[in-house]
Image (cartoon, rainbow, N blue to C red):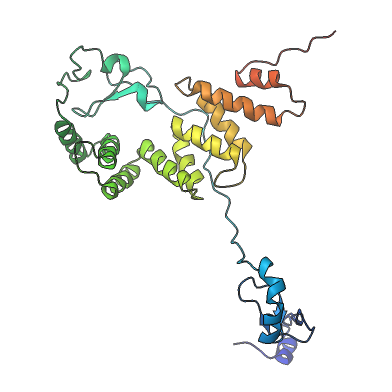
Length: 294
C-alpha cells in the first residue's frame, strides 16, 4: 500500500519523483494524449493530433526493440580428438574424411574404412548395404541399441527424411530427429540447426553455431567466423572471427585454404599501415618479412 506524501516524509521514506509536465506539440497547451504508435509527441486533444499528422507521419514508426548481443561460448584452442576404431590414429575433424559404419557403430579413418575392395566394413567385415532400405534399417537398429553412436545415426536418418532418399520426404520428422540427435550430443546436427537459423537471420544463430564450434566442427567454425566478420545476426565481432579462422586453419583439413584467405582479409582490415604482406605472413603462421631499404 502506497503512503501519502506527508506520511512518507514523516516515516523517512524518500519522496516520489515528480514527473515533468507535458505540453501539446502543436499549441503548447498542457497535454494528456500521446502518439500511440511511436510514443513520441504529446497532444492536448485529438484535433491537434489530427492537424499535426501530415508533419508527423513520415517520422512516425514503431520503436524497434534492442537486439540482445549473442552469447557465444568460449571456443577452446584444442580439444581431444576422436580415434579410429581400427588403427587408433587421431581422426580428422571433417566428417567427409571419416567413415561411419552403421553395422557396428564404429568410426574409422578413410584408409581403414575403405581398405577392402568390396567395401566391407573396415572394423567388423560386414558386407555393405545393397539398397537404401537396408541402410535405413541399419540406422534404425543403431538408434534402438542406443549406444554412443546413436547421435550420428539420428543425424544420418534425419538427412534421409529431409532429402527424401529411400523414404517419403518429411521435413517435420527430419527436424524431430535432429533435435533428438542434438540432445545426444551430435555436433553435426547442432551445426545444421545453426545454419538454418543463419539462413533465416535468427539472432540465435551465432549462439547455436558457437556451441558446435566449441566442439571444433569445421563448418560451424567457418560460418560463425564469417558471420562475426560480416556482422550477420549481430554486431561485428572480429575477435571471435579471428579465433574461428585460426582454429580452422590449424586443423589442416579441407577448409584450411578458405580459412587462411578469410584470416588474411581480416588481418588486412586490422592493419593500420595496410601492409598485405604482413597479413599474409600472419595468416600462414609465419613472421612478417622485413622491409627492404633503398
